[in-house]
Image 1 (spheres, rainbow over the protein chains, first blue to last red):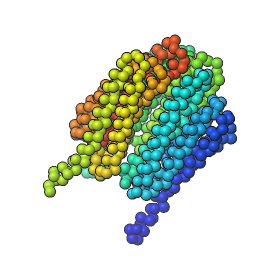
Image 2 (cartoon, helix red, strand yellow):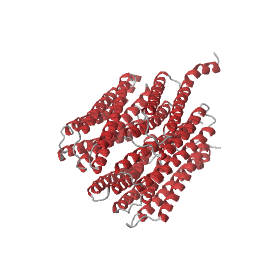
Image 3 (cartoon, rainbow over the protein chains, first blue to last red):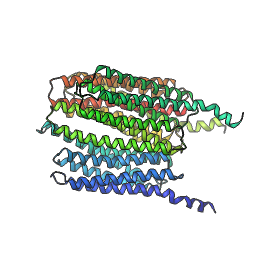
Image 4 (cartoon, each protein chain N blue to C red):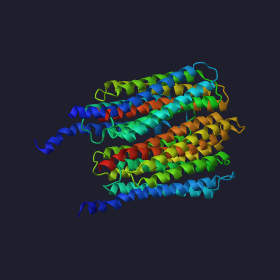
Length: 213
Length: 213
Length: 213
């Protein structure tokens, strides 16, 4: 067996991780697309919409679990085992926080504020950049494209940050009931946290590239 | 000197870290057991109970400090020095957040809510699983048992998460004063954070196993 | 070419990182000094002071970006590439949270509370210790001085923690409007977070030393 045949032998196992990360990215992209749709109208959130978000969150948990199982089975991984572990856990946080946002909108019986929908758009844009970054990771030796997506994700996080401070101060100036202000503030924090988790994932991806490129 | 004698020479130093982590685990287990007892009755928290929690927190700080000192002295460690550092710091967070929970119950003069005691039970269960995981780490080549405890810790965190959302929405529906709602919400966040820190410790342990097993 | 000439060849590139971290430390030190000055009087925060804080934050972003660019260009780094990445990002958090504190004081039209100034002093002390730690990092083989500064940073964080709990309980006992209490609590959290980020930076520095010393 020559060297190249020897390496081809390991390729399929190696590729398992890329494929799993891409499935996570696809799931997050579908989840954030549905978040945009579900928060479009200002009517109360539906149980059906909430259920859909819960399903995406469970789907993400399953993929996370599969990645950990593969980590246990495979000796050869495309990059450090602990980097795979960290990236998996930070992508899982994105699903958790999108889910938490919708859960609390439902639980708090909060009317859907127009700004929830603005956050949903930024989240969706950020997740789509993250998806592109993850698909581009297969070629660790050409990191430029991945870095460009990470820069975009950072820009989205800044936008979300600005939106958050604008909306929070408007909220305090509004004549809403104090308890409603507290609830809306808490939901805005969950929504803003999603973009923080996207940024964290982007940071982990960048630090992987920095090691291997 | 033969090879096996050579390695026995290093064993005692190596074992120092396991022993220190076990002392941390024992301290956290005693602390969370006393948390359960201290939050059992719905009467106000006593200064004596608060003091006990502070002592546990200080004891944990001392153990943390000892681990760092050993790290400075020992060239040979059972696993990567930065992993020891991370695990130590995340276990210290558990003590800090249990302590903070009781500190704010006392400072806010908050009546002990029945749900505080439910959180204390979950925290205690989670810490006991963590203790078992830590005791099982001595044998890094047999990771199955450790992983099983980590799965349990994740399950506890999910339970705490569900309890938190249930209690928070009940709180908003209650007729309590707004300031009391803010205080109780903040205490519930500290209590829920403890299980997050247990989960984080479990994640670090898992990622250590993933590297060495 | 002898060995020492060979190593001198790499030194300039190697030193680039120390120099960039020192520039970050200088920027943070100037920022926290101006924070002390800007929060000295109990009058409302000025737009000019806010603008200055924004400029420091932008300056920090630029330095952060430069460090990432150097990471991309340099094969030889004084310590692990991912450690440089982590330290850079945690120092950036310090600038972000100092900036956020002043942004929300302005946005919330919050009167400057005397305790803001006490926090500013602790932040400034903590940042100065961090600056000393960073300047002392050039000599990784003599870690004692760096560790001493890290111990101080941890002490500052404890002080900020105590100040926070004292001020928060006083705030709840005050007769302020509930919305004002919520705003001030949120600003105090941002200020306290700054010392947490200093502690996190110190922890990363310690874990780098633990690896290399």
